[in-house]
Image (cartoon, rainbow, N blue to C red):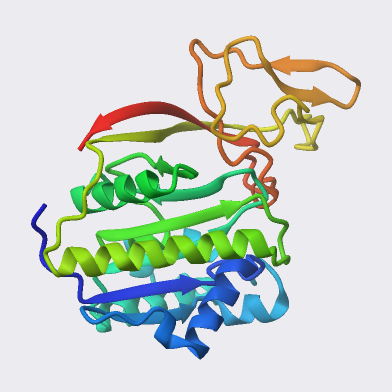
Length: 291
């Protein structure tokens, strides 16, 4: 597939200050730049939220990875720490003429190695197909198309996130670290081969999980939790959830089942940072697409 060469890449860690895998990978690469150096493109490494990283918190005032809607970046009234930081990052990405963003995240959910796309760009689909071909553990999650997404990766058309887990917040886990590092190297090698015009063979079939909604925990009128993820659902990310199967276990021992019309594939199950967002898990549908 022909595509104009990728000249400038941003490799971002620390969009969330307590997701250490991406933070320490970026630090490693900043100290050992030869590990990611390639002939055909430049790489900008970026620690997105140094203040949150220093504090060991996801964010200082608000979730940085929800501050990148175009209208919010233009809004002079948005002046908390992350809102100002988002503008600064957007300026840096634009000034550096970044063609492609790799935003590194980790999750407390059992997401394995997930590539998150927010558009249907053929270049990214081919990259995703290549990654899932050489490593069957790689899953591809697609957020709804044609929306103003608020994520850092939306600062350029060829932006995507890598989400790895399960790993606790504020914790480094060697196996997760090494799997993520191997995935980054695979991505950079693909980009280099693609820039050289060397055909990277991929399967035409790609399995994609498309996000279609989310479900909140059971709560009372005051918004307090009344239950938790059912043991049968815990850590079952990307596994089928059929109507009538358990979702939640209430504190008084009742099972709440999934009452949708068809089988879905939950992701981000019991993600620690999503309690405040009132999301117990996302619902996805599984598709085979031809690219």
